[in-house]
Length: 261
Image (cartoon, rainbow, N blue to C red):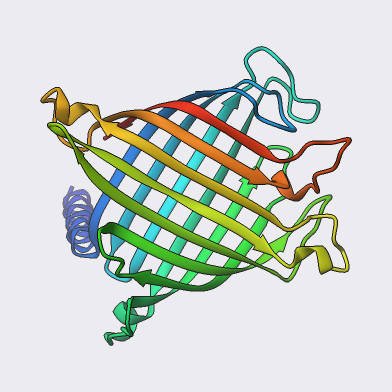
């Protein structure tokens, strides 16, 4: 009985200590679920419905971002993935300023980080990215980051040793008794056409969301429920070179509903 009580007390103490440590390390976090409906996609079936889970957090020594898409092809089947597919990315960054307890500031640069991303998907190539990241102070923006990645791509269309440039941003505009939030990212894979293994071509993907804070307008709470649209322009989608016989340049928009929790 004494051993049981001692084990329980020890476990409770370790749990309390870990929770206290977690509260000290974690500065903030947010999670969300989104539903999107769009048409005119290329390569995959034209009509798509997507359910997306997103997680973002900032902790003592950096930040993390994760998203997972579950994509439905509206009754059609993709020749490689069937009637639905999934895709996700995990992007942790470590702050040199926070880890070394020093300021890495110069002009608009607020901090310098080690940026990493793991890309994964059903039937898709996996990719591992690593490189320098920067937090920038851009007037008017909620945040603006700029990451430079060295890509290592596996699978049937390899693209090793090429660079990807990825800015992300968030900007708010007052609109009536609520706000319009404009956020998103740009992925630009450069110089890949010169890769000796090169069937994964240079490509550019611009993916902003324009969202109205419906929750604030209806008195449900700020930054809780958004409605709006997501725009997707993707030149050489998936790194497949566009041609007269096979269009891989995507230009489409999707209706969006997003709930944070």
